[in-house]
Length: 257
View 1 (cartoon, one colour):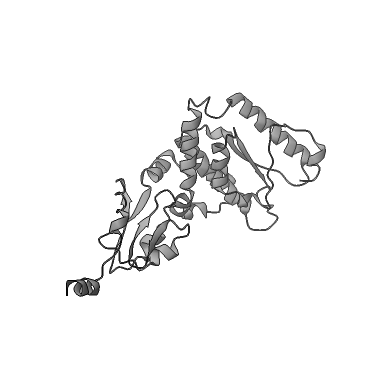
View 2: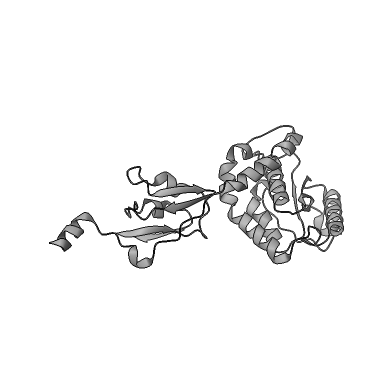
């Protein structure tokens, strides 16, 4: 922003500039908190004054409302996350916004201390939440795509109960070893390479890498129906390595003869 370099504001702030506030991903927010930041402030163009005519600032405001609910669910004060507006010519306003937010964070104290959460416990919660971002985006894609001219309408878009249900119904995907035919469709289509396997080798989902997108579930052929969507139940342990080889019918007959 023009003039910012000549204005004084809190030195506790670490600035990261992006081309549009709409480019700020919710994973960036959770990652910042998990790395020990006490607050996150997003400042974008004024509503209706998007430089790129894409309405990225509306999307950012929508996303922030959901993030506030998610942080609240994890025990983090939602006031630690702020979004506001400033044009490129309003250097003084920018500096004032930064100072006001910095003072608010000082009043709240270090992250986790005021909330009564231990550092490692909170970090683990936030890291787990970051891993769920792809699932959250898919589950809430319709609401995240909403565009209201009245910016205030976004504030009541997400309820506590809705977020509780969202996180309670997080799915897991598991490949039934008795049904997997090692066709490789799920492995090739997985966007994060979370599925291991090969020809004639039963495929396994790495639950640590899985982003809950459901692509494997969608592409698994109906005649196999090997990929299972599990909600509210534990994922069975992976099959032992020595039992992963699939013995085809012809191979069985040849061995028998």
